[in-house]
Each structure stands twice: as C-alpha cells, then as structure tokens.
Image 1 (cartoon, rainbow, N blue to C red):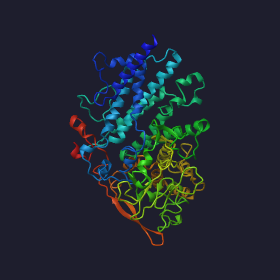
Image 2 (image 1 turned 30 degrees about the vertical axis):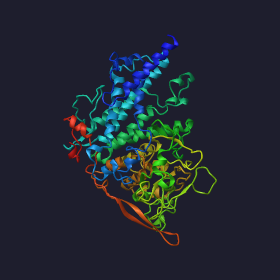
Image 3 (image 1 turned 180 degrees about the vertical axis):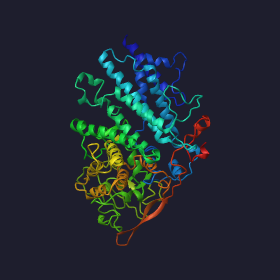
Image 4 (image 1 turned 90 degrees about the vertical axis):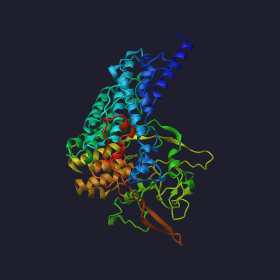
Length: 601
C-alpha cells in the first residue's frame, strides 16, 4: 500500500472513530452516508482499541466539578459561594428536576459501559489481530481485555456510588446491570438490580480483569526491553492488576459500612482489609524499591507520575483551574468555595491532641496558633501568608485579611462565604502578577496510597480492634503511617504520637471515631466526604447539621476577636441518597426511585 493510501485510511479511521464515539444519544451510529455500520469497527484495530481508550477520556481530570470540591459543598466541609449552585440546592432541600447535577454522570457511565461491552461481546475485541508479532499481539490483547473488564467495573462503581440507595419499596437497590452492548437510551425499560447484585458484578469484573492484566504498569516489571513499547510504564494511568485490588477494597469498604450492611456482616470488612493490604504491600515492597514510593512522602498534586498514586485521570498540563477557584478576588481568584468552621475545628494541635482536649493547649483567642501542620497546608485563615514555593524571600505573595469589612471577608462574589479559603491542591509557585506565570499539571487522583491505608485501618479495626495482628499490620500501625506523613508545604508529620497510642488503647469505638476524623482531614476537598458521612450513618441527622463560620473583628491595637459559631448555611436533605435522573424515571416505568425523592418519580 502506498503512502497516500495509508494516509487516507488513517484519516478514515479517525473520522469513523470520532463520529462513533461522541454521540450522547446513540452510542454508536452508522457512518453518515449510510454505507458503513458499527461492524466496520472490527476492520480497523485502532478503532477497536478506541472502544477502550475513549472510556479513559470520559473520566474527570480535576477537582473543580460536582465530583470534586463541589461535592464537598454538599457536606459539612465546604460552603459554595454561589447560593444558586445546584449542589447548594441539593444540600438545602431545594433541588429542582431541571437542575440535576448528576444527570450527565448517568449517561457517561452507561455510554462507557456500552463501549466496553461492545469490545467484550463474543470476545470480538480479544480476537482482533493488533500486531503481526504473536507475542506482542498477546500483550496488547490481554491488556485491552483486562482494561475492558476493569473499566466496566469502574463505571458500575460510579453508578453504584452515585445512584445506589434504598428504593421507595424499602429495598437496597443499585443500578440496572447491563452486560450487553445495548443502548439504554433506546426503547428499553430496565429495572434496578439489588445493591448486593451490583457489588457482586463489580467484584466479578475486577476479578476477570485481574486475570488478563499485568500486576502493574512499570518498566522494571518488564525485563524484555523490546516489550516496553506495548507494556510497562508507558501505560501508567491505565488499569492494571493492583488497581483492581484497590477498587475491590473501596467497594467492599462501602458495602461493609453501616448504611449498606445492616446486619454487620464482618466478612465484608475482612474482604476490604485484605484487598487494601494487598495494595499496601505492593506499594511498600515493590514500588518503594523501584518507583520512588515512600510512606512518609507528601502527596505531590502536580506530578502525574508521583509514586503514591494508585490510579488517576489523564492530567491537564499547565493548568490553573484550582488556583482560580480557591483564591479570593483580591488575589485574582474566584473564591468559589470556602472551608467550614467544622472542618477547621477537626484539625488537632501540633502535639496531636484534638482542640477539645485540655492537653492540646488550644487558645480560643488565638485559634490558628500551634495547630497541626496539616492545617497550614490545607486552609488559608485570617492573617495567613501565601508564601512562594522554594523561595528565600520572606515577603508573602499575598496576606489574607478576613476580618469584617476587610478585602477577603464574605460579601463580594469572588470571596468565600466562610472567612476561610483553600490552600490544598494550590501550586504555591503560581502568581498571576508574575511576568512569567508558573502553571503546573493538575490531575484527579482517584485512588492513592492513603485511600488504601484508611480502607485497611477502618476495616481491620472493625474486624479485630485497633491492635489486632490478623493481617500482619494493625489498624493502629496503619494510622501511624498517616500521622507521620509529611505535608505538601514542607511541614513534618508526627515523630512521637502519644495521642495515637492513647486512642488506640481506648478501644474499637473510640478508634473508629478517630479514623473518621483523620479521614476527613486527609481527603477534604476531594469529593469523598458526603459519601463517607452517608455510609457511616443510618439517619439524616449528620447530613442535616448546619455549618458555621467565624466572625472576625479587628481590634484597635491590631489584634483580633473571634466568634466561631455563626451559621453560614443550614442543610435540609430529603434523603441520604441521590435521585435517579428524572427523565429516566419518566422513560422507564420499571425503575424505582430512591426514597425521599417523591417529586422525582
């Protein structure tokens, strides 16, 4: 075939793939002139691979959306500045069917599931010839087959997390399981499978994926250098075997939690602990040797190859979306969200004790002094300094002034409503006033080392308490990893930790509360808090607590007075579960809506 024909064929493949994969209504449609159908996909190996590859593009790439920090705005960690935002309306019980913030996620998940089901159907994807060399071809087809199962598990988990709940008939329900390449936007009338059936399907797909995938995409695990064009580190960011174990740990953890485990089936906790420990062992015994991983290393939000990542989205290069979102108007940001007083109070003091403990030496007149270093790496408070990263200069880029009437206090639409702004995930080398603006890569990390540590600690504590030895590691020892970890702004973790020893000795219940609080600090602004509160509780009380902010007065001598209990937003959830999209309810009469959403039936 001459070069011209090769080019034409390549362009045709690209056009076919692009058209086939962008439709939101019919997931794959015939070629526009009518002389090509979806069967043409199997003639072009690039298009077959595209069925899998497109699913990764369907994943979010940052935290500035309704799956990230705005989701925390529906919890007690964050207040969203715009009172008309859909997540605010969700949290305050005023969400109309026309403003459903989760509608697109239902479509996204089923669109992705359709693509991988097409790949998996009759093993057509696996039986495609991708390369002439039989050995290299096997590397490609096994990886793609494993990824297809893993991606189906991932998007099913996405559906279960968002839309799983208790139906109006009182039964715990998940989502309609679809294992064939069926466009559910067509004339179908699906029913929701039970919650347990959905979990079992996700676990089964994870196990199927594991059979085909390499344990990890690392060059040092591929001894044959010639194989590294089709295996190894170049596939970092795609599913591998260890990621499927991590996903199983997260699924089991939620399934074991009180809201979804009313009989407290301990076997679910045990499965969560075992799978999380497998991932932890891999990171410590394999990645620590050759991938630069270390248990005390601070999370690097701007390095898409950071060793602590288990699974992440494709990154956005040279991006400043988070900085724009978090900084106040005075620092050329949009101040779209702010931390609550409840979250601030959850941070302990620098000696590790909670602020409610008399030994913590907390001073209400100086509430931001002598706090846990994690606090300073996470939240900008009144009079905080934004210091330039890796600079010898003692002059701050910006000083936060949050007292009443000051430039960063509530009121202007580009200022937080809580008198706090967010530092976590902000690159402290970025200043829009610089001649050359230093923007860094940003990515959404779906699963990281800390997710596995917390999953293990929570589950192991439920099985055998804080100090058990069943898994070769106790829940207390796992939490010591978290407390000793360094912070993103150079702060150090705890080298001695008497409070950890004390709270572990207090027993399972006290240690469970400790784990919950530590988890809150670790994953704030990452979109996890709402789901954590929901799975830990069986009523609406925790979700429906009002959230507060400080009122700060600047005194004539330059000191400040703090009143920490002003309500900034009241919450009124009709349900602990999110609604099934209203138009899906209208279209499919067999669907059962989640409890509390009577107007959405």
